[in-house]
Length: 308
Image (tube, rainbow, N blue to C red; front, side, top):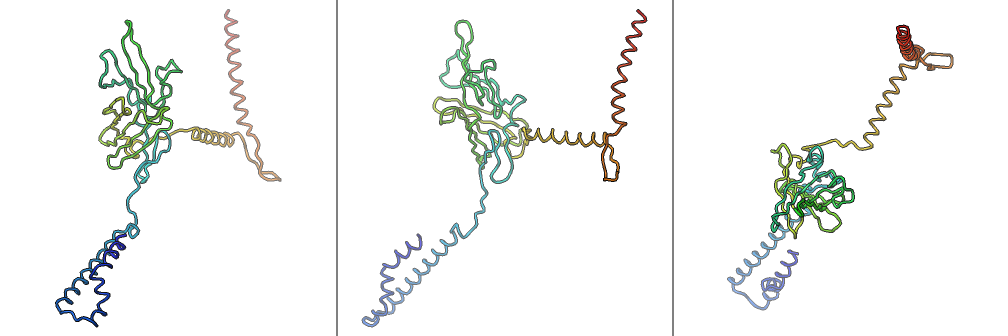
């Protein structure tokens, strides 16, 4: 585009027209030497400018240089884990919660225009779904990621209302390489997120904690978390899924089968080849141990009967 613009600008110019028609003009008109020198210098300057523009355009072309910039962002694996696109590691949200999976439980929330007799409490779990209250299964806060509790005093007793502020299913991950912050949006049934949590990578901290939160009526609930586990591969945790548990049980069963089999079976060579037969000593020992306890009980019963 730049070359086309320069050519379109240069070709209709008086200098270019004078250059193209110079041989014809020399046959009809004789120019003074000063005019010829001025035109020659102008043409040299124009060609130098055109060459310099072409060189700068080619040197700055993106196709002439390979893209050396690293891929940024985080690829979601599941509701609790994402892998860095640049290959730096994995961020696991499960490592940020406590023993019950909570990052904050019934934490007081301050907001504007809140009546004095109303108290707002927030419970949040980055990975483990929870329900509040636990005894009510059909409540709004059932299997949620964030639950807001509104408590107020009425008729000489406290009344609590529970509001869901997002679930783990369908959450979205967005990573900012400059701020080293992973932002996770939690939705409910609406298209707009109800809660957005910003996990900031802070390797100087030993534990994860909620630094600040903002609740407003116009925007989603904003939560800022400082955590060393927001750094890639900082808090790697092994996930024991059903497949892993099955493989462990299968390996233990196979090892026990071969160990017990080598003890209970005895190989011997025959005319037809090597065969395996049960080891008599092993079975006899098992039978002996089973039958040894019964006479002892009978002997003890006989002794008590004689004494009586």
